[in-house]
Length: 117
Image (cartoon, rainbow, N blue to C red; front, side, top):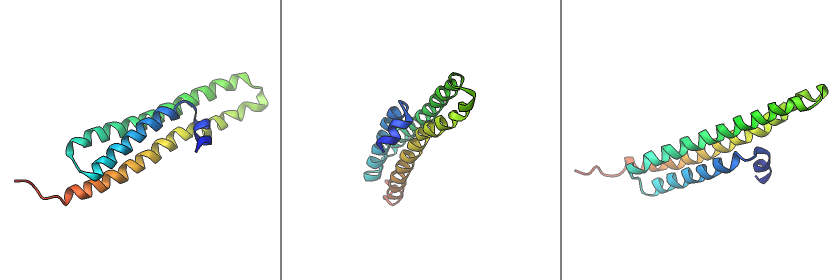
């Protein structure tokens, strides 16, 4: 896991922070379903995905910018940078999957609650 963070670069930090908040919000929703939590959950999930995508794009910019600094025999090195940049997307997707799982539990519990009225 630490190697994944090292390879992914700076973009891993906000992706991880937003993702942990999204998972925590969805776990809270799973424990006690409250429709008011849904908008925060959706916003944090979106922010997690956006942050992972931004980390990927910034990593690709850095990788592709470095191609001009190496010799012709090393022009393929950008592929290594692509693999490293994909760690941002992988982290975002893993955290969103955990969030969706907890949110599904909350939705199931919510559907079983008696309707007030």
